[in-house]
Length: 361
Image (cartoon, rainbow, N blue to C red; front, top):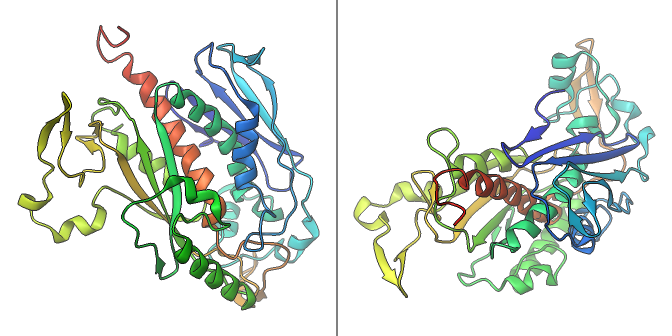
């Protein structure tokens, strides 16, 4: 299957299915000499893994990181880095009822039509289970970015119609509750809403906001590889994502150019802008301001209610979710958004080192 590799110089390939023996990733192009902390990789995987709280799927997976190449004596060697995660908690029998049926808003029908032969267990390759491999790769990318003083902070800013209203965010509070919202009062409302829809056998969507701090000026390539375009592709490749906007986003259409333009100024000897409607990207290239974007996730398609559909023969059937599923995906998707942002930035950071003769001075 094509389409499983992301990046130009920092290339990440992921593989595996939801109910297969294991999932994994290969990074090609990571510079040698980068110190790797395996506990940080495991910490990111723990933030994504199933069964971590009462508002996530109760599938039990340890998601223990196993690096099998590319790291020696705690440092990258410059050769491909391969990582594996074993699948242990799958229950394939939970999906026998949809072997020949198409679940509404899932990839069952499209995979069947495209490949003619699909792994229906847990959605196979289309399952969000594969994102654990991305988190592994993204955690390594984040450690590389840290060496350049670049930080990525993602958090849940909306669940259904419940929105976080804080303008100033304390990133230290993101992990202080199970929904990963830094506003404690809003977090309580979000958790209550997720529990409510779960009790009804239904699901609810949400929004993850992300801020990248410390990004240098110059990342991004004209014309088709603009930084925000690649960030958009990275985010839209995540399961259940339906929307991506950066800076002022869709609200920007309500403004006037005279109000929306980010005016340049000198700040402690550095160029900055008085506002950041551009979201840290201008002309597709980072301008040194915080990169800000938001990612919209739809309600999880698997619901515990009967729904009308059809099977392979075109006959009317009724399907109903079985097993263990997330009533809302955003709490577990926070580290996935961070991972894909990190992979995108590292790729552009390495590409930028070839942009001019003095880039490495």
